[in-house]
Structure formats: structure tokens, C-alpha cells
Length: 519
Image (cartoon, rainbow, N blue to C red):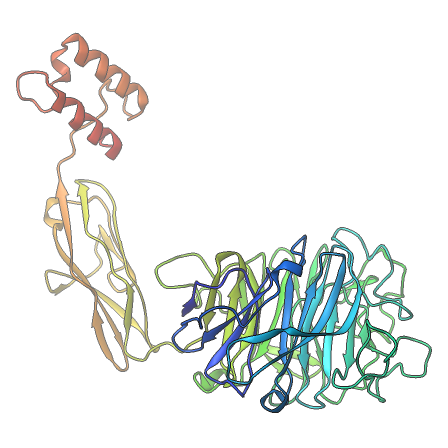
């Protein structure tokens, strides 16, 4: 369901058990808004607004938000954003738990590093298994090149193309203003000469990651370049140090890059991949752990930014997932045939219910179960049509399966015949309409819980005089020119309404018939 259309450019969603009735939504331009998870009502003002210092060039913006696992006690939360001077900053702020206004003066830099325009990644999140903070960082390219700076495979003095793991609640670098965090002692590269912050590497644009709140397992989408999109997985018990193979591999397929060795057994492969053009810009999602849709408990949802698609699968650890399902049509908003578009992020609330950010439409959607008793989302509309035309009456509704449809005319069930089709579907079609088809039409939706009817709509059939003025067997703009020439010259054939004389009403009625296509 559409929860809100009041948030500008929503790009991330976070929650805290300290404020369970609300979700916190990042606006790409730099503000964080607080939204009631059930009503969609926005709290007044912004929770935090750093818009004056945020760059929105290229892929830039306020990219992510995460609440400290101990937020109820310490009031700390963290944001990741691009600065105007070409850096990406992970910063900590403070707020009073339950209050919907943070202290903008409490900003404290945790990590700051140079970020050229290009792939950001930029997600942050705390693992429920170890309570460390994970950060995704893209390779910085603008697309169209195989990591031209060799960022993703470089693990010494290189922040790009990585996944980091840090503890932001203490400081191992008191003399470095750009590094104010602790390195977990079991990080995989500690003491190796490589960057101690690195957890995994070899990624292109890890756009949106998540932890399964039940298992602690880690998922992230990685946006491909030419031909493949991928979803990657790490167990909660992973030791890290995984090399995901970019730029020498795109998903499980070789590229022309030579920064590493394609199909090296040491490379980590995705658990799921999709080819172009089925997908074009993957958006990682979440494992559903809510209670509203129990049949989907444990299902991983994800989407595609450019193809406007939503899929799910049942995960099986590092093995290939099963039961891949396309939810795009099921999640198409009522009253439209357009799917949820420009999916920039998924999110969850404190109860594990899922949400979708549609960034360029300024909309936030919440995944909710179909109602058992049918609900009519869009009624058919009255129609006034000419004889011998084709008439289509659609209805949009939802309800528990099996959901059936039955169209009625004047309260009597309709059956298909030579001219009528779809009498037991959401769309009734009448071809070669006759005067006898006029009447009041209703659709009855029936589920195991009962029936719901649409509002009766009137169908009116009228005679349509031919606008083929020049009798060439087609209605086109030449008929208008010829008719007006005849009318102004006093041609009796221009007496379109057959009143015995020419008047302006002839012009109005002719144009009405012409626009209706009366042949």
C-alpha cells in the first residue's frame, strides 16, 4: 500500500526499537523525516537536516542511516553522506530517544575519505550477531569501465570497492581526525599489511545491504555493468576476507579486466544473478521477518531500480536460492498499471515489516497482505459510446485467493457469447456494441470470506453519424477541410444534423462525430 508521498527523494529507511511506532526516512538532499509506520503521518519538521553540506551530484547524497544498537541508552545514530568537497563522511549524531528532533551540533566524524563522483554503495548497518558497524563502498567509477583505477582489488590504502567492519564506539586513532573508531581484533586483515578496516572487497556498486534480524546473515546487491546483476550472501559466522571478483568477474561471468583471475576458486560467487535486460540496476533488500504476512516469513525481497521490478526468493545460505518469484504485478499500486518505479531502497520497521522507497516519485510503500474480504480499488467508469464500437469495462480489486469475478447487467449475471468476453474476469469486453447493450453494469468480486460489488455504472449506446464527409472509406483530417469548405460554400451536404439548413450546430456535431471516429 502507498504509505506516504510526502517525503522528498526517499533513499533509505531505518528503525529503532526505542521508537517502534515510527520509521526514519532519509531524503537524498540531506534531511531525515520521521513517519508513522501505520498512518504515514509525518512528524513536524525534520529529525535532522544537513542539506547545506550534502552533495547531490551524480550518485551522491545522504545515503544511509543506522541507529546504535544501544540507542535507547546512548542516543547515538550514524549517517553516511557525500560532502561538497569530494569526500564521503560517516558521522555520529545524538538525539533523545523518542524525540523526533536530533541535535545538529552533536556531529562527530567517525570516518572521512576521498570519494570521486561515481559508484558510492554507501549503506551502513549494525550486525545483530556482533553489533559491529558494516559499511559498503563502491568502486567510484561512473560506469562503462572495468574499475579503471583498480580500486576494488587494491587492499592497501584504498577505501573504494570494499565492505568495511568497524566499532564506532571507541577510537584507535586519536591523532587522526578522519578516523575515530576501533578495529575489531578479528577483522580478517589485521596485522597483514592490508587495511585493517576491510571486511570484504572486489565489489562494484554494492547498492543496499541488510542483515537478517533472525540469523545475522548478511545480504547485498551489487550493480553490474554490461550484462549481469547479482545478490551476494555472507553467513553470520563468516570470517570475512571474501573477494567478490570485480572487475574481472561480473556475477559468475568473466570480463576483459585483468586485475584478478577470472574463475579463481578463491573468489566468492553470488548466490543469485539476473541478466540484462531482465534487470539493469539491482537494489538489495531484506529477509522478511514481520508478522503481517506469515506465509512469506524468511523470504528475501529485492528489486531493480531501472526495470521497476520486485522479486523474492527463499534463501538457502551459500547455496542457490529457491522459489524465485516476480512480485511486480502484485505490488502495482491500485488504480494504476504502472509498477513501483525507481526503487532506491527497501527498509524494515521495528516489527520486521517491509517498506519500499520510490525515489523519483517521492513515494514510500508498505508491504501488506491482501485482505480476505475483497476490496474494490478502482471501479469501472460510465461510458457513452456509439453503436458498433468496442467497449471495455475494467475493475481493479484484491482479496484472498481464490478470488473470482462475475459481471452483471441490470443485476443479472452475464455470460460470454459471440460479442461478449471476460464476463468472469476483471475486464469485460463488448464488441460491435448494440443498443440492447445499454444498461447498468456491476462486477461481483468473491473470495472465501465473501463478496463485494463495484458501484453500478451506466453504459449508454448512441447512433454515430458518419464523419467520412468525402466518402473515401476513412476518417481523417481531410474530411474536416472538405466539410468546412462545403459548409462555407453553402453545400447542402454540409447539413450534418439534417435540419434543412446550415448553422453552426452542424460544425459542432460534425467535429464531435469526427473526434469519435464515426465512419
